[in-house]
Image (cartoon, rainbow, N blue to C red):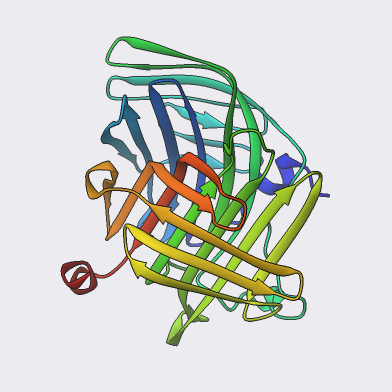
Amino acid sequence: MPSLSQDLASRGTPLEYWFIKVHTGGLAFLVDLIVRRPIGQAEVRVSLWVRGKGRVARTYITSWHAAADVSVADCRLNDRRCVGRVDDIEWDLGYDVQAGRAAPRVPGVSRLHPFDMELVSRPRTVYNGHVTVAGERFAFTDAPGSVTHYWGRRLGDRWHWISANAFDGSDVTIEAVVFTSRLWGRRPAVTTSYLWRYQDGRERTVISPWNGLITVSGALEDYLLVARSPGGTTRLRCQATPDLYNDLGEGIHQTLHGSCTIVERGLTDSHAGLEYRVGSRERQTA
């Protein structure tokens, strides 16, 4: 298995993101380091919730470092630690990745890089350290989270993202994306999806439509994702009220206070990461 350092190494593509997410007690915290090479711009974007109240803070810069580690403005990320400062938010978080790696690939197809974005995620990551928000310090001790790297030509036109790793009394971990992408940056657009699941030391990945079929039905903030494959069916009920979502711009809405229920198991993660992107017209009619 590739090391975390290899997973985080820069791919040099036009658009590249690295992000960590974690929650504990009264704070849910996600920070993106973003590089937009065609326009010579990098961004640090913090999306957080203090006792359920969300906000977004960001800073832009025209220089950065991205190789085996990443530095943007006052923020640095490598395979052991992420530290940074944006506005009145400061953080110093160390992490250890546990077993499990989500890196959806289709043999013979992925090497051609047909889709807008590619990714690799470590959904079972443990965090220690602290985050300070407006002078209030939040300590993290063995807190569950994830670290993710994705890259490509451009953002997809639409997506749903699900990240859940805090199901009470279980080590079950879920990562899923339903993603509408152009092929090689041109039309037509196609929808491809994956669901990665970890349980009791075993990993299983369903990639639609390669080795299974994934569908989504319902509203943007209350929907059912169903992944069917020869290995079985997983149904995820995902919910969050509109006020729990942070507006990240570009049609992207995100919460770390979502509810994700594995219907057939009756297991619920009430701090799931949920995100969607739609066009303005779709948002108005949803």
